[in-house]
Image (cartoon, rainbow, N blue to C red; front, side):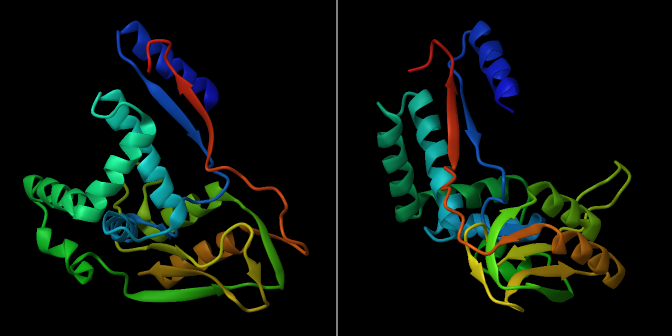
Length: 227
């Protein structure tokens, strides 16, 4: 990922553009929700100043860099403060509403998320043991979502925007036996059973709390012309 990011930044620099790439942590899913409709709901939470801390933090960081690169703010930190102000004032959500309208979407769904596609069934996946979540197989969560119908394994596949996964535990969290790990939102029992088997092997446990704190942003790659 770092090599690809550096290549993109170098390409942008040759085109006379100031570019920055952030290498972010992908050893566990970002936020709590996986799946088309579920992720939109989580986006709306962030635009209202709520939502998971890691997702909020990364959104502000990215917005701060965009404000800075666009010469709207003198620094990334000032850009982050500006982004936070846009959220707090409601201007960010209103801009998103305008984007939805311009693309032919239903802006009323932003105020009533029940108007968004919803799965007919849910299944709670529970922990088989007590301990700590020491690691999560991030790729497997994406695979499980595709299996449910939330993505395409081939271009002819139809995407079901309602299905997905809501996480209740992430790396570092303690669990007791039978605690909820995640909730599977599904429309097909056969597909839900397949996804369940994938997800059961996606949570890795330890008897002690993980001591290593993984940063959300591992590296920032800038073009030499960047500020």
